Image 1 (cartoon, rainbow over the protein chains, first blue to last red):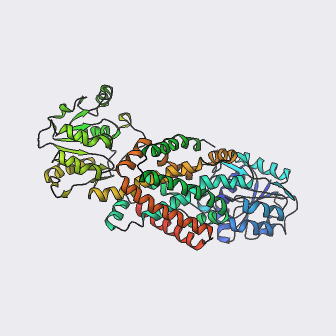
Image 2 (cartoon, one colour; image 1 turned 180 degrees about the horizontal axis):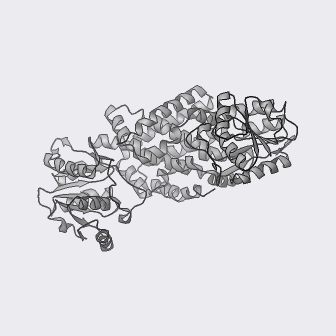
Length: 285
Length: 285
């Protein structure tokens, strides 16, 4: 199959490495020619270009650019691709993209591979990043807009080649679920750092920094990450992030009340409940 | 030196293994004789007993029992140890213990080795747990109660043998600092799980559990841990946990306001600030 990849960053690069290894011919498009050279040198693509029009011969195109640019790129591709070409994206929000993209391109399927690593850029790309991890697709079936069945089948076939575990849901179910497990944790974690650095006593501030170990390290990790990515989650999944954060605020308020009233049995109940619940979120995909 | 260890759990066991290796004679006391047998079999102690009175020949005694029992055990030891014996503890709060313990025993020094692992119990004990990690001691110098200088020197000598990095501070500085980096993260993290499991839509709840990966795993880790330990932190460091959690709640409220008003520059500012601040908390001890 001829496969296009727009945006040769970590995810685009990893898709290219795997798909080439499975025998597909991979066409990469990046904004900068330097990135094209890197992708060619790493053998993540067969052909690299800075022009979307070079994807004309592709059967399926992955759009792997930042969330804000997905719909505009689909709109541009719609001017140049043959009608049967499937377009999909890899963005971490779906509601804000899938309807709009499907209106520009009937063969669009929203997707979200739940894989990543802390390094960014094509230089961090590797084989088998998606293996064993969840890959969500979000076909729609609303008035006037319905995801094409053949497009779904073609994408599913590639996802199975990548070794991912396939999940189907609606864009809104996806966005609500990832708000809980991915976007809310970023806000929870960032505000932990934010609060800690507000400690006005300098001795305590220095001591806290020196004594911080694995507990603080783990809880603060996603809140100390890439701020652009955090902003995109907040912006494009605003309603669900707001909903989950408001629910979270109620839990924090309740804990404060329990501490104020020394309601130790309520604190114990919460901690017992969370201890029991956490393993349900650690199932292998 | 003859060294006593009361409470043969993870920390007591690790202390025993290291101190024996440095040539000290280690006397262990546990509540259950089964634990004594285990400690002897693992060579974590030279002598094991269920009787505190068997520590009479010790130069220094580590009390490694849960926070709630530290002062009562010091009180009991005070009835049977020679006056020059040093007593120290390893509890993760200090304000609630150090004054009281010092009043029972003038040769008491509060201590807190900032080391641990996820497994509990003597069966998880290992060599060199303390190596390279912070070890805080909290001598006091208040009216009527002052930590003995010789007692401090003796404990410092052992801490240096363990390879730990020594910090001195007051009990209240300690409790405020660990509230930020250890106790607040537990509350922040537990409430994340607590909020997520309240999602009423069953499809979304199941999907969230299936899609959760490293971000949720890390952010929820300390909140899904041992509930008894979390309760002890809340109970014995209540004022500082309450203070830090109230400050944290203000940050969450501000983030909610920024989301509601789509104040993206404020969200960016927070995420940039936390991205820059986090490395200060990751210094090697």
